[in-house]
Image 1 (spheres, helix red, strand yellow):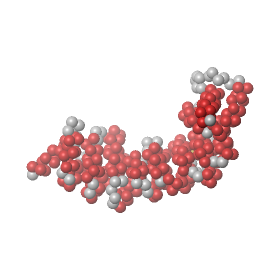
Image 2 (tube, one colour; image 1 turned 45 degrees about the vertical axis):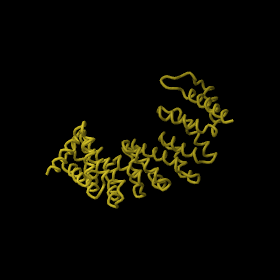
Image 3 (cartoon, helix red, strand yellow; image 1 turned 135 degrees about the vertical axis):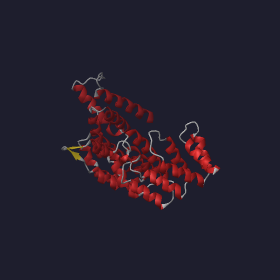
Image 4 (cartoon, helix red, strand yellow; image 1 turned 180 degrees about the vertical axis):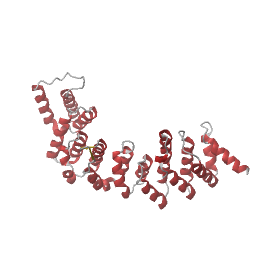
Length: 320
């Protein structure tokens, strides 16, 4: 009886920031009894805007493992977050569910893997993507590619896809051709997904596959053109590279600061391919009267081109 009281006291202390870490350590020392207490706490406590106690319980079960710990973690990761009305509480509990999902990657049981695959069918969770980054599964690839459309989870989803290497290439190409149209235009989320796909493809594509994305150098979306050019410059032949270099040159006129900055980086990285194109572009703009002194409201393209030429020449001289 005294032991049960002590365990309950430790569970209560998980919500006290001054004692929570010591309480968790004590529960870990209890082994199976600690597993039962933490699992019961997760099943009976309610989501809160202060999720630290539930998060610590998840951390404890992730360390202790065992069948009961696995069952509790699956329950937490699989809960329907959408039914939580308070957005602050829902956000806090999403962190708990996400951490529980990540913990499943460290369980060797088939049950844990099947639970993770089932989670791919629901709301995107960072922890699910991170779980497949740690222990990739080809069945997860199509879901993870679709998650690139979600700004919140796109980065870990991208890392998980990269972990699969070239096995992910076909799914990426298929999704790349899919545009989600609303009111006669491609949605912003769809545009960002396709741009992110090309960013990943740039690391995976082989030289004999460049033809599969070369037409995207003419895509109406700037970010898609930019990342298509990045991939072609990395793996294309000289003719393809020169065409891609020209695409990035034209993107320096973009109103998007990020596009211009990334474009400058790409052109400098591949300066050897397009050195003559840079010189030609500078001459044409100078003859057209463009100023190399304009910085507001944004830098003129000529300013950027001068900087690329200067840095490119310095790099070439250093290499010689």
